[in-house]
Amino acid sequence: MRHVKFIARTVFVQNNNIEQAARVLNRILGKEEILDQYRRTRYFEKPFQTRRRINFEKCKAIYNEDMNRKIQFVLRKNRVEPFPGSV
Image (cartoon, rainbow, N blue to C red; front, side, top):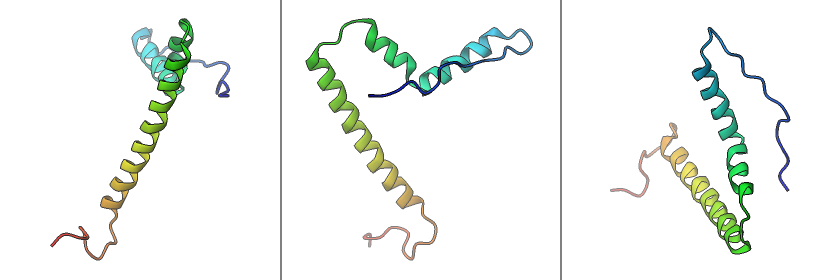
């Protein structure tokens, strides 16, 4: 079970710029997936939808991890051959 990361947040409004403060708050809520959790719990999610969503999230995490590994490999600097396997 995932726990709430932060109970409360404070966003300061500078120079009466409410739009910028709202953007900052939305960015924080999006990063912590609070908005996604709210959207999921607003309506009942059928069990098959839950399974489908969880499987999609697992596959997406595996894909992103693999892509990040490949990108880091290509961006490495101290390689003898910059593109191994190519002629």
